[in-house]
Image (cartoon, rainbow, N blue to C red):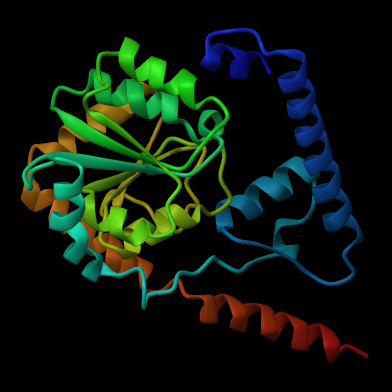
Length: 270
């Protein structure tokens, strides 16, 4: 709780403290009860999440399966680049501008403050598209202004067509405090974006040094990665191409098959 207050630069109010305590306590109890009472086999959406569940709740890691999230490749694929010029024109951005995308809600947990500070600290000039909404939107607007990057940050609100934004961006930035297997990372990778993700947020199955970067959850680390990526258009494209190739193996059909096999094995028990 102290860390959350430190990130926000102020003490948490009573409502925020209660929400945090209830969410953390409730989720942990539900997880533990499910893992300990399940007569069959429990599945996590990533190997890293399975490792964390085994460690936190003291269950046998071998008893936990992994059924990774998937993505609809008919929607999220490198053809998203066809939206690049149109979306950038709508935002007044040129073809050669460096553009990072942050997409999601619950912005403190997802690390928008880290992304904003990274843009401010980066040696190269990056624009940041922010898609989604949060109760503290005005706080983040003021933070962007205080950091001197309000002209580089574009708050877009919620979107029903995220593929257009993936197509317009050069990379995806996700400095989350924790993730199981973030769908936005998978969607972005499938569309050909290198993914910059926090050590606390990466699923362990998607991002490595060839498809993006797993980073400490600090503005300095993300600023350095943005500077590194921004020095070479060719490198951006190569990482994006490899990210799309890696993402192809993540399908909903694959997840369904893993779970179907587990159900059939359980049903066949005497």
